[in-house]
Image 1 (cartoon, rainbow, N blue to C red):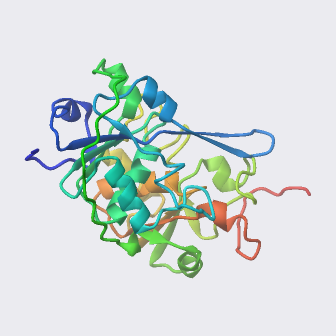
Image 2: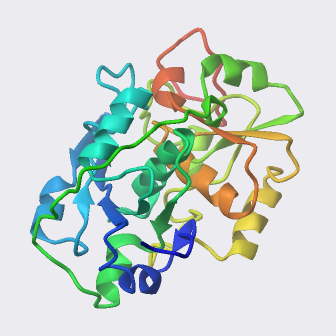
Length: 298
């Protein structure tokens, strides 16, 4: 059994040295997400076929478009029930004593989402592979096409509901000086100048922007690694986030928001909740307020 704690941010060398440990579970969480530049329509595709072609040896595939989201979701990627999540973890061979390393090929957002879900269901023995699949390949580390035999496991959820926020929590946070709303989307989406992706352009009022996606993201565009801690801290501090008593992150569907929340955890800031519905829920409800910096003609 592995006897050293898994770091929240896992370097490839750490995982490489432990690939043969039977207690280590490696999970590929990849989803490919695209938006139609004309309509803003979302297209999500599971990365399972990519995993089947090539993956980190011994890894399994965790499907955020399937068993790792709600059975009958009201909005994309909605978190599952504790029972559904526990069953999904057990199917992946993840049990109470496992050590889990999560990765994806899209810049760590999807891995951070599953990390946040694990934490929200009371599991703290997990880390995100820094740089993900792309960095693993760039460093010429071993790959495999073999399926992993999944061992029997028991996953006991211990939910932490405070790690997720709903629209009522967000409404109450608007104008509350003790709560900081963090929009983790690209600046154009925050301003309302990009394509309309979530029903209405713009942002939730009183929120600030710390992008977890795009060229200005908290993940380096070249090697897909999280920015060094001093730079991460500066990004959040410049937006006024680090002085807040409570933080709620949001994006379009709770994925980039999870990455921002994970980054705050790396900084030792844990009074953070992810707005699960994010703009997929908020933007569709015309009764909820939105702000934009751009005047649009009808």
